[in-house]
Image (cartoon, one colour):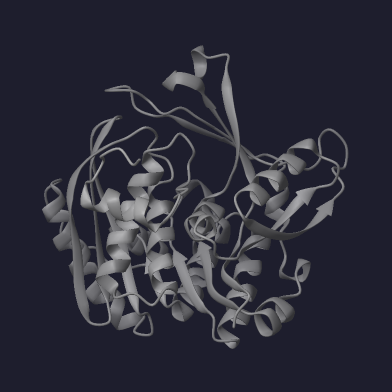
Length: 352
């Protein structure tokens, strides 16, 4: 029996968002939460009672580090990571993600403030990987292209963690999550690293552009902007990907068309075990769009962990993404499985 359902490598930070859907520049009241793309994926499983683990790093004595630890505990997510000295006012800190939710035709805006981010110094030597993966056991390792591309140190860390996970039979989930600013000047190095991680991944998540820019695939001819065209192009792309990475059991992406900041068309597509599964896009109402993709990945992995059939993975992932978008937090926090399945069924009747 493995101790942890999902483990991840991440750089924990802080997200501040204006109250009442106001814009950042004309607000003076903000909500504060602990955040990272990778820990947000774990939150579906952790909320539903599964043991999850964050591998990260903290600033010693920082009240912000203490806040992050308290929030992770409240979210039922365990953590391991060194506390390192700040090094003075201009030393290490935890990153700030400054965002608003938008409203109507005013789009959401996100500003990342990451100078001095302590998580950029993550090393595999910070953790006892043999104990975590070899003795305690992890069912799924989830990695994101954000942490894998953040710095030379985090790239090496993710590679070593992925190698150790694979050695002990842990499933590897890799969300490519391309960010141009992280890749600038490191294209060759990161292409090689992402190829190695993708070569051991059992589950690959990413849109058409992610596969092109991270792994060097040539995209199909450009089509229309409608979601049906995106589905066809993704299918064509995955046929190429499967030839190069045949060990993967599943390939998935979300489908999103923005009507307004408050309404999207939301769908998803999955290839798994030789078959295609599609959740046709349908309208959803949005409180805050950030985290919908991570909610999707978290819900999909929860289905994998429970041994469900792939169509159920996709359905639960789709609905978990909706749940995240229905919250001002950037993660899905289901009360129970029923809440997620009710979302999937479109059952918004009051629960008494």
